[in-house]
Structures are given as structure tokens and as C-alpha cells.
Length: 50
Image (cartoon, rainbow, N blue to C red; front, side, top):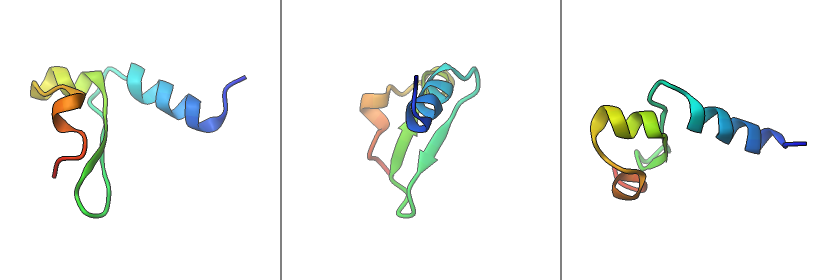
């Protein structure tokens, strides 16, 4: 059985809509495949950026 964090990550990754999360300093912490398709940046290119 999955824990809540694993379930949340699975939902974010499989969402058809772009899901982007930035911390209080504006650093991008979450970026799903739909965000990559929409904006043209891979996770590797964008995670940790402001």
C-alpha cells in the first residue's frame, strides 16, 4: 500500500494538467510532464530555478 506522499507524487506525475510548485523563495520544487509539454522545459532544466 502507498503512503500519502507516494500517492500525491503519482497523482502529480500522471495529471494531464501542468503542476508546478515553488517554495517560498520562488525555487521550483515540483514540475510534472504536462508542465514540460506546455512550457518546453524538462524537469532537469527547471528544478531548483527561480
